[in-house]
Image (cartoon, rainbow, N blue to C red; front, side, top):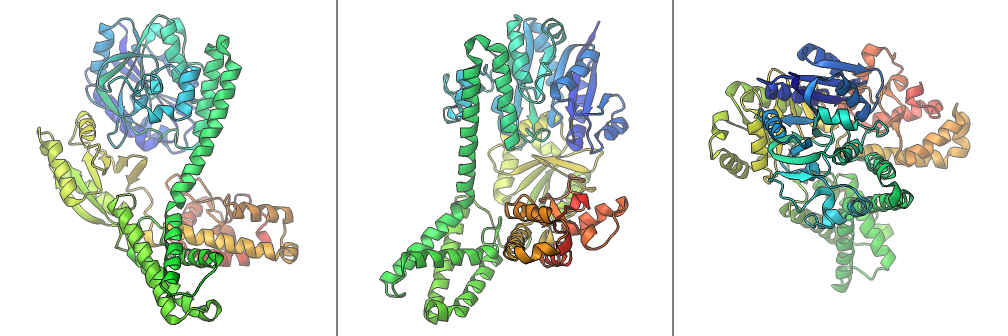
Length: 638
């Protein structure tokens, strides 16, 4: 008899997620006749070494280049011997009962060529791509233009995600998700493998459609839910994803809808892509600028009110706008728009505003009483707006210099102690640590008890210890707790890392000091301010300064790249070398060159770590002007 199940995981630089996935896969395979393949697309994070050391039973295919999702899966499918094949993303967690339930269903439905399960994300929310309809030109257009999101349960507009079908009922569907796709091997031998013209996206749509063309059925099976962190291996929130995904849909249309006007479909799709991208940029800008706009309107209105009350003399409209904008600009420099908002930043901003008011009394013509009145009004506006946002749970407010989390760890005493100890370091200390025994959540009232603890203790995170809780139980708990607003994480057994939505934390990860971390809100603000001020100074003095720079064309190029926010004047020695490092823009200069230190491989990482942990803007300014002649080159060229 052939092997029952062949599981194939294609990996690219998500080592921690891959380890968690493989652990749950082998737990689910216990008692079954199965095999596991990992196809690695030239990862640089040590994924292959981890697989060889911790999972020697895995059949590892280590590619020397990134061959894409389709080709990588096909490599393993050709070597597989299972009656069924599972294509599984590495950023997934499967319950112990998933494989048995699915195989039993497929055995009982011989016409089922493919099957997808119910997927939830790391917050417990249902992922609508668990069941999808065929992206005909009309369906695709409704999806891109956002009509499917506006009317998710409509049979007409919501067909892309089959929103009219209940998420907890077994049903035949048209399209499966490549994140977790069970396939009948006999069927693959008939219709062919994944189309390798799709590099990353669209191959699951194409294969699902060919399954139905071959006379087989695709099924949605919600009785065996899994976690899909959604995007750790592909970063689906990026603009690049949007274009790659919808271009894949164009390829699919040209392949299958030739008689239905593929050129027109391509034109409509591409037009909709650019419209959607433009709308997303506008909405993102409005969301980011909402708070300053509200503050500006309120401050301007306050000035008008002060005039009517004869507190201020009559001002021109332009003067009101200038004063309101200057007030917000001064307070922004002191972190009023940082998240989470700190009360200390408001106080600093008000003090700076008062000093500026005193210093410019003669120029503005304001009296001391008017300065105090404007100060009080500005403080009232800022505080009231932020309190309102806090009450509406739109923004968080911190009253401490360092944000500390309130965490519940669920598991045995030994495992919760280890998890909390790790989180204490990565969170710079914890505001509250409470534990709950694993047996408690196994009770019928377990979820209710956790919800009550979250409400009473105002918790930020809940950590499940996987050594003491089954994956199946964790998945069910996530579903039951999905609307509590906390972050859920899973502490791995026999390992020293914790995984949450889009995060991994371990004792080997970098401990960045919050007060001076290079990616803190205040550091980002100071860095960008410095970049702009230095660039403007260099631009004004360009006719003279350019003669003192070695690479003159490169100097002008770098000057405008920094102004546009594409580069920063000082960055890492080796940008991108360590994925755990806080991300900053590529630098024109780096600490190795500016501090005249050797670029020895053993010291490069240490230099970047020191820079990330203890960022000082005045040091960067000193580096820029001390290495003025080198501003035409790049850090990665020196």
